Length: 193
Image 1 (cartoon, rainbow, N blue to C red):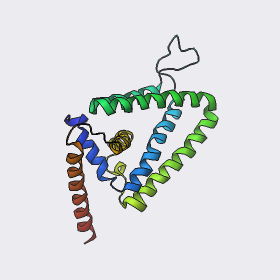
Image 2 (spheres, rainbow, N blue to C red):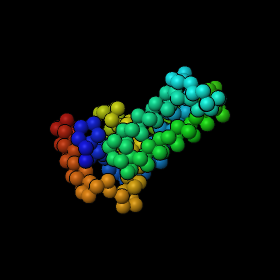
Image 3 (cartoon, rainbow, N blue to C red):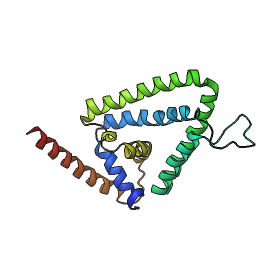
Image 4 (cartoon, rainbow, N blue to C red):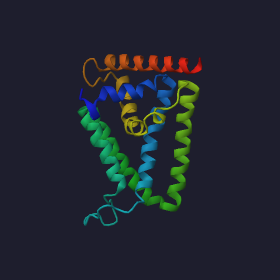
């Protein structure tokens, strides 16, 4: 229920206005977290920000860690319960991506990441073009779309099991999404006439 940067309703409604078709939402549920994970794989090849004395050949505090930490903190500050689950997923992705990056090495990792990213992004754009019939949120607000996407799909999954961050959240967000979609439709009609 926070305001400003951590206003969950505002962020969820923005992202939800671009993701109201159930097939498109399902496609995003399948492919958003793999995009996050494979991005972390590449980030492990950036020079470490801090060498830990006990991390001999193991985990280093690198750009991948900072990236996962920023996402994790953002989610926890927006909504403590689901945000904590999202934060745990961020750190599991960080650990898994570290292991995969170490096993593959850069010469193979970048190819695997490129293939995975192309596959996942292609499906996301198919979801928008074929099912949603609306451009992705990232074209209107790149940073918000990238930052919110993993949390949005997690909240969608939790909603399927009846989770609501607080009473009235889903009805408030649904009203905001409906208003945003009506505004988009009206603007679209003005441009076409």
